Length: 186
Image (spheres, rainbow, N blue to C red):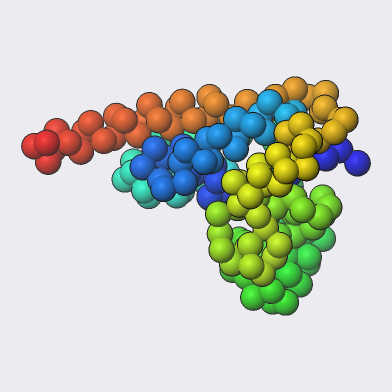
């Protein structure tokens, strides 16, 4: 099986929002996994969750649409469809671990791809579903002395190209902030 990770939407959102308290750590983590060639998986709601969160956070629907378009074109991330099997597993994990519905989908996706694959900033996913923070995941690999996340496998698909999504989001966010400052007289 190809080594893989499930990265929660909150890590992607933090990387795309320079005001997020986890921004720097999220960017460093995503850059590291980008270089590793590690396979990324997420429930299909990932794009929706990121787009809606950023649009709401910045009060600009165009931010959400631009990020959604960019992420949907990312060929290196496997978005898992909400099949009966995934939903059944999510239901089981959700009620057993007392998770929110979307979190249960991430936990179920991680369970489908092996142990130790869920990376998140969400304390409940960490405490109840075995997730780890990006910082902890990087530190664990450094402590083991392994190169990035995998040895010896390097995925043939190449590096994950998440940076266009980040650039689009940052450009749109800066435009939104500029408009807000002008309206507020700042």
